[in-house]
Length: 111
Image (tube, rainbow, N blue to C red; front, side):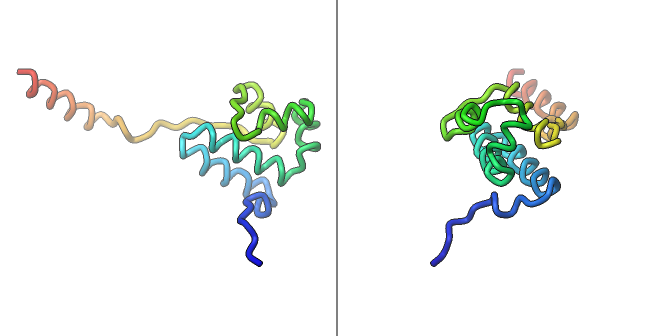
């Protein structure tokens, strides 16, 4: 019998969790982030994570349910309980050269 893939079975170390979250965050998809946090919570133990985050177990379940939209405050509490933080980096979408080319294109278009 082939088992369905479950990422929680592979999140054994803080480094594994960090790599997993980093990849999910790079997708820029809030639903994927909630699903990833739910997977991590299963790997860590929902009750244990809820306690460490200072939230009730039921509240954590609700916050990480399929159609949930947890507040940034809740997400930060969960990340803190995991000893994780979020960092922000600029994307390469708007480099000075691209902006300059776009601006020149606009001038030519409207001239």
